[in-house]
Amino acid sequence: MRGSRDLQDRPATPAACPSPVVTPELQELEVRAATIRHRLYPSTSASSEMAETNGTESHVTVQKRTHYSPPWADVSIIGIAGSSGSGKSTLSHAIVRKLNLPWVVILSMDSFYNPLTPEQSKKAFANEFDFDSPEAIDFNVLVDCLRDLKAGKRAEIPIYSFSKHQRMENTTTIYSPHVIILEGIFALHDPRIIDLLDMRIFCEADADTCLSRRVLRDVKERGRDVEGIMKQWFTFVKPNFEKFVEPQRKVADIIVPRGIENRVAMAMVVQYIERKLIEKSTHHRAALTQLELAAASEPLSDRVVVLEQTPQLRGMSTIIQDIDTSGEDFIFYFDRLACLLIEQALNNVHFEEKTIATPQGYKYNGLVAKGNVSAVLVLRGGAAFETALKRVVPDMRTGRVLIQSNVRTGEPELHYLKLPDDIDEHEAVLLIDTQMASGGAALMAVQVLVDHGVAQEKIVLACYAAGRLGVHRLAKVFPGITIVLCNMLADIEDRWVEKRYFRC
Image (cartoon, rainbow, N blue to C red; front, side, top):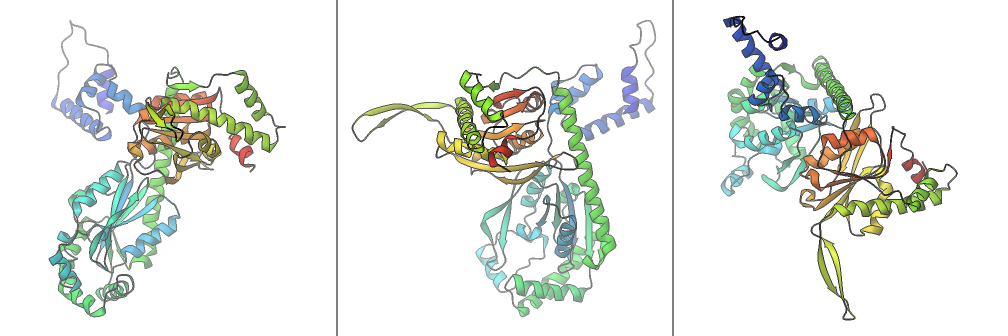
């Protein structure tokens, strides 16, 4: 990279001077530099590299710079393999307990068994079906889920019932983990999975210990009988361990004997995860700062709407901002302002004419939204808009998202998420919060909606007050969204509205 940049920064060679000699060493250096650039920025095309060489900046490069990547966009995946009963699940849960963080998720390969045909199901109930062979695992679905999670997308994890020996119709949704622990006997078997792993672990335990653990687990958790467990162990489990499971030791980064009892190995894994989380946090905060600097000189987007400052609006804002206003008056006037904000936000929804016949025989011509309109409240400030939402659109479907700033680093963190079903098919989605300061939480909230399939043009952010810098940053990263405000502030201020509204 340094050699390539030095060549680029040199002045052009005059026409009278001979062209520089391209040596094999120089060609090798250029190839290595291009390879590094491609690995660091895989989405950048060859044309953008040519544009950089010519001293110009391509549209792809600009988009890369203004793109917002949440902490879960490049999730770290740790694979834990080993024999059945070797302590993989116990080690995984011990790591999670040690970290005590909500965004470290355990993904068990037991959920990815292939659906059984009637003949296979009959064999399974007779303990004659081989569940310890790689053919029993649906690796294609597993790889797709891991790739989606690695890219920061939502993944639907299947649920497998061992008592019924069948995959269930419902699924479990996983979204926004920072670290995933993949545990299963074949976690290090498929090369596609190995390429996605950041750390590979192999658990070892004595064969008798593994057998006793399997008997206890299958009897207690899977409704099996001891005779069937012993039959499967000697018919399938033990031969397949020597054939498929044990060779995975060769690709492991760490081999953990004695499982949870090996505190040294557990400490190594925990320290690795903690270091990864610190790196993600540092990069995320640096990216937010870079976006702030890039947006400072940008003009205000034409998709930012500020309510007309009528005498009524100015009067209500004055009452709200008066420290001597009583709690009852504050709630009363804020609800009125919130209704005006929501009504303005609904102006971005497409409507169609509809005629309704009344019981008295009269006809009323009105408007109705072309599709469903939902609202997502950014807790806790967004909850102050619930009364206004019920007044304006009584039957509006609502969701919740809780984003809080870390008290030590100031980094926004996603703690809770509950969205309406089929939100990606709705005509419009209102994202509601009382205040927006630097825009970090708003960036994350919009990214959550985008990751769930909501187009930017369908998102309307309604906010009572927002800092100009936060609005610039949000509009630069997501130019398609509409922002509706009551007040635009020149600087950042503390979140005081929700404290006075909820009186705490």
